[in-house]
Image 1 (cartoon, helix red, strand yellow):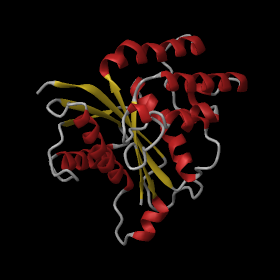
Image 2 (cartoon, helix red, strand yellow):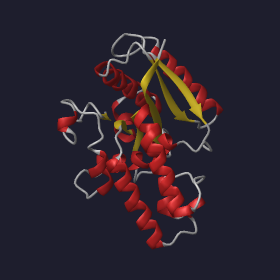
Image 3 (spheres, rainbow, N blue to C red):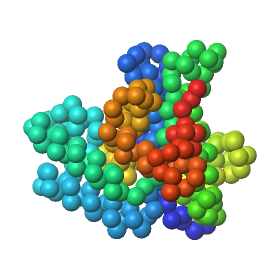
Length: 249
């Protein structure tokens, strides 16, 4: 089987626990970032490296949204002015970059109230994400090719569960009742992957939008134009509910 023209990177916001989670952020977000490989290698990676060289003098920095906002980790020494400048430039970079987003947002509080034995929110996110990814790749005539999907590692037990769920859905236990031509790759948190950093940067703003849709959210105003939508690229920023943005329950 040939390889797809697309590659997919996945990261999360929040944790999938149904007990003991932060009541101020009762959602779990799984964000799928879909890149055309040619654009990814020729443009996206270069743009991110250039940004890193401009701010840090090297490209070994891994862009984690939480660390940037909290001034922790590799960003503990940047000033408030540098922080705001970096966030602004990242917003501009995301805005101009061509990629498609499929995001699944699970309301953990509502899930627990509605179901006696609720599914793991992470597993629900995988299911909903893969089903919508299948639809997107069908539109792009890529279903006769293998598409690689990169998840970030979380721990031995968690990774094994992800592999099991992923394989189950791809073997036909899905909405389409078809085999999905997807292959899972589990990447170390230390891997300096541009695609995974994009997925990290967009996940939390999507969760915040779902929780507080009327609150100003500059990042989401950019991200919403990346969401997979019902009527094609001419209608970006609209008609993405249930397509590029799946909220459950």
